[in-house]
Image 1 (cartoon, helix red, strand yellow):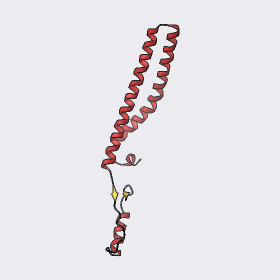
Image 2 (cartoon, rainbow, N blue to C red; image 1 turned 30 degrees about the vertical axis):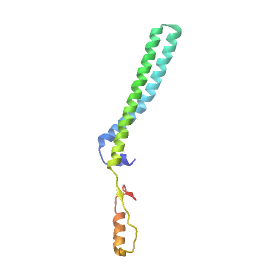
Image 3 (cartoon, rainbow, N blue to C red; image 1 turned 45 degrees about the vertical axis):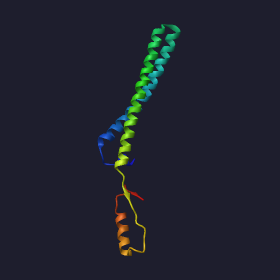
Image 4 (cartoon, helix red, strand yellow; image 1 turned 30 degrees about the horizontal axis):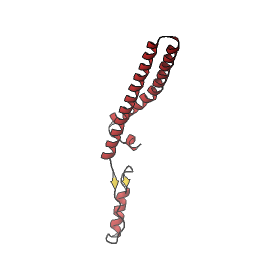
Length: 124
């Protein structure tokens, strides 16, 4: 979620949103189309020519192959973008523990600087 809130490249976020919308529309359409093709192939095997049944089965295989290929390529692309973002957008704040060597007024200044940091940063 932090990646989506990050004011970075908007093109990558639009691509993710577009792919999610396509996935939500294409998945039911591919499922219904595949089911209809297979039902037609079964009907053609029982009542009509085997050549049409083989054609419908080949169409179903091609449909699901294209769907799976698109899904895997899209998923891999977005995983690569996310991993690249994680590698380049690490924000870490090192908190210095109280010690006897640092005067108390300097410790309080260090503490205030740490609190003024952006909330997106990770405290270690």
